[in-house]
Length: 201
Image (cartoon, rainbow, N blue to C red):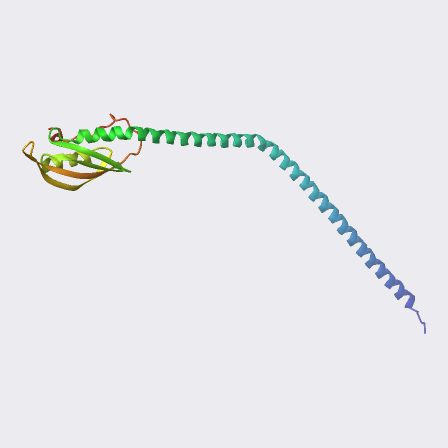
């Protein structure tokens, strides 16, 4: 009977398996290191390209930054000019307002039928006191006031019959109020409103 000792063969095979596993491990490690190096190189390349593009874009944006600064300056100056124009318009309105009001009130008075004694202005409200020949004349006056461009909300506060002994005449003393409205300065002759014919006779 032949006996074969297989122990050396098994030991050699085991050693071969260990060497193979070690080789595979080192090859895997080397592959991972190479992959990491490639990934890092590629990432650095992309990062460098990105920084270069960012620098290029920043250089391209510099002229637009100057333009935006000039636009902002122009807008600021435009706001200042508009503010000054608004102040000028307001001053012009305040300058023209008394003239226009007096003109409109004078045109509303029925000639030789109604006389004003006083005019008081408080804010946007005007109080008128005067004497009218009769209630119809007073009604015509109020209608004319209400149709004026810068007067509205005409209200009669009181009307009392008064005897003027020196003229032997009875007439109505009245007090009325009206509101004023001014949106923008306008020449007095622009778009004049027609007055009722009854208020001119």
